[in-house]
Length: 370
Length: 93
Image 1 (cartoon, rainbow over the protein chains, first blue to last red):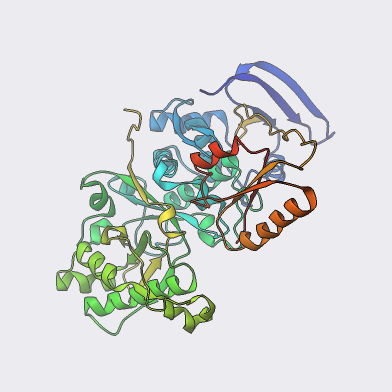
Image 2: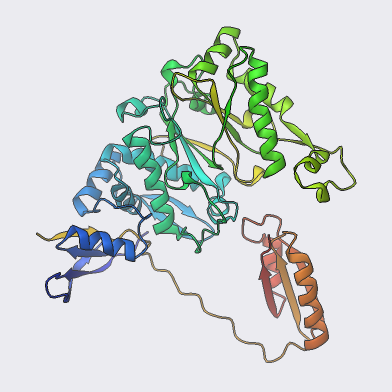
């Protein structure tokens, strides 16, 4: 339960640079009063509250509009981050969602994403603190994609539309402002990657021969859901020289194996993104997502001796033939239909660090306390 | 025109961390060393243990390794730490 306290108003007079403070009757959140939007932006930046980009002012009305859209009270507990022992409320998330540019209708997706991330299997502290530098991939499924104007087509892994861009950014601002996940603070990433600004995509369900990611993982074809996965940067592949599904997957597998050898050998959730041009070949051949998962599970493997070819001969050791699997089982491969219509491209999105953090899929609007 | 914003950071009551009481001496004490499990900690903590024993008279050094370097120490380690006079936790990559 959040404690309520007295709020203090801070008025910044740009003409005289005087700071005026006053107290008001008790309210639920600390507040600041501004007379100039530029002053507000600089205050936010100087306070470390942004990702370097301008923010939308989180006014009480804008925050309340988000809460109303999600039918949540300000004090609603979305989850607890157990390492920092911090209870994360709907209002706290709403404030950061407004800042990110989210409209009220986007907010339920942000809440769902945080619910997934705060669940035990996700192990939020690990991915957000690690030197490994992963981001958090969000995959949105179901009718809510169309309601929010999400696009799983062109530029799918980048800024494809307002909703995915803002929702992805909101999650990052929540991490920074509520869990101190900032570079050099909790976030010890050596490199990081651009997905740490925003990393949210919508699956292109309408143009896919397959069941959606959410249906695969939840068993419901009609649900709107968010899948969160601690993820490294996407690695693009291309194969326009075959229509054979196995050969196409061999290219994906080669990229997975490269990640195993070059970055991390530990098994976990991998995601592959399959745009239409490659998807069509699977459809013609009658390959389901399960067929793809099985093929990748069986072929995405490396041996310790493979490290000798990439400068890691010193760790081959006395077991050169020891085999490592990319996936603990076929279900650990997330197959996502997304991307623009042209080009034999695809993408492999590796996990942060294998089995430490597990991808979690949560329905939008689910009550985890019920 | 004046407008009001809500502060976006965590504002629940967070008790500040305080340092533990300083030991009067290390001689005769039991010191726990908790490694995050990464390779870099081993030689470093080997030297730390040597210094503790040789230079400061520590009689017992308990070396433990977290089972998951991205999660807090498990309950077994936390319980064991109740019997140590001091604990050194370290990370290595």
